[in-house]
Each structure stands twice: as structure tokens, then as C-alpha cells.
Image 1 (tube, rainbow, N blue to C red):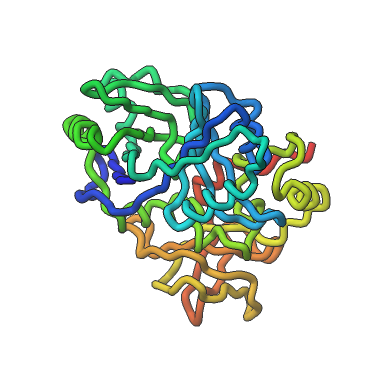
Image 2 (cartoon, rainbow, N blue to C red):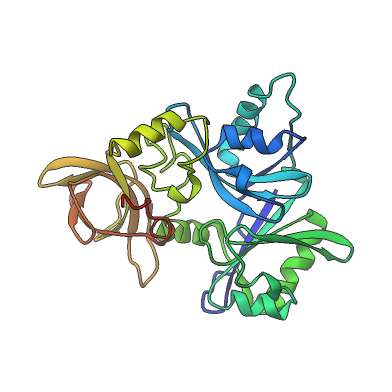
Length: 329
């Protein structure tokens, strides 16, 4: 699947990235119940035209990947990272029993995606006669036509509840991108997208999403239903919530100097965590990273040491700040 990201006006990234996502189509009469049981979100409460984030986890709630899901009339579309797409598809197929009416199809080669985000995104959508999506809830999507070819546009941009995601056939991708750029959107490079991912705090597989960390440590509360019935990882998640068993938290870290991911994070000489992602950042941000830190050892605004001598300041990141844990009241 080809993937491009465009950001509007005030940013100046100028080339299309090679960074891609993998897309799968889950169909059949039992698709909703199947995904309800195999992932963390409540699919049974969603109707056609709605969407959500959901997470694929191990039986002990260790993270595999975040998936953005669109519920359509006859199928559910899932978008995940290329690092995990193949293994997730194979994992899901293993859980389809003989009597289950579920089909899973990898449609990566038949689809292209484009993300529009930035301060002028709403204006561009209105100029393209897509303003009926502005103000709709995260995951809401509608179907359109471009030169007779289908186009699906949804609210949200993978790294934010703001912005919009476009899914189309590869033959329609050029026309869609041309229309967006004609209204002021500027293509973003793959390195710029990775910088934005880290600054926004969106966890990525192989970095923040591994078997080393569970879904609640990753802060992915928006993708978790605490009220639905049995599903993979549910028992562990319930225990973590009931007994306050979350041992670490994912933070953004403003850094004094570059440092490689994997380096230890320390407070007063004691190891309290690990750096998982790093970017040189922008002029405004400076060097920036993501890392897991043991709970109750540091708070927002506190200083930590990363690696040998890089000084870091802990900050909340937008992607995770947008999905706080439920109130205990």
C-alpha cells in the first residue's frame, strides 16, 4: 500500500514518504464478534460509518500493534504497521474456527492512503466539498467518488484525532494528492513523519509496542474497553486496573543532546527506565525522545539522565494526553 502524508501551510516538508501501512479487510457475518474477541476495542457498539483505535495484544496484554479500524457495510478495514501486518493476519487466521463466518484479506496492494493534518486541514476539506466531515467524531468516515473511482475519507490522522485519512485505489491516488496540494497541502518526507510521530508520542511497533510493555503502560486507554466481555488479554488488563498494577509509563523526553534508543534512563544514578525512540526534532523542540519510566519515580517536569550524560525533562505527549485513564471516582 502506498502511503503519503501531507501537512498544511505552515510546515515545509516537500517529498512523499516511503513509510507505509498495511491494510486488511475482515468480512463475513461473524466479523464484528470475531474482532470484538480478538482485539481490545468494543466493536459491538460500533455501526456502519464509525471507527476506532484497537490494539492487538498477546494473551498477557503485551502490545503487538495499534490498528485503526473503519466499520463499513460489509466489512471492517484494519490499518496496521508493515512490521506487524503479516504476522497479525496469520495470527487472526489461526483463531478462525470451522464454523466461523469470517474472511481476512490482505488488500495492501489494492489500496493507497494519504493523511492530511495541520492547522488548515479543515479549510482544505471545505474547499474540496468534504466539509461534512469537519467536526465529526474520531473514526467517522464516508465514501466518495473520484473520477468514478471509490474514495473513503475518515476523521483522524493515525497520529492524532485531528486531521483526516484518505483511502483509495492506487489509480486514484495521484488525483487525490494533486487536489490536496492544489489547495495548499505540502507533502511530508518519511523522516519528517517519524519526527512528528515521536513529538506527538504515537507508539510504534518494535519501539514502544513490544512484548516488553503492556497496553496500559503504553497509555492506549482510548483503544481499550473495560466493560465488554471476554477477549484476548482481558484478564490481565482487568487485574492491572483493579489492583493498580501498572508499573511504568510512557513519557516524552526533551533532551539536552542526541542519544541512541535503548539507553538507560536514570534518576540519582538508579535505572528507572529505557529510551525507546529518538529524533533530532525541530528548531522549536530540539532533541526529543520517548521512553518508559517506572511509575512514582518521576513526574512531569522532572529531570532524568539518559545514557551517559544527556539530561532529559519529562513532558506529556499529545497522542497519550488525549486518552487519559478512566476516573476512579
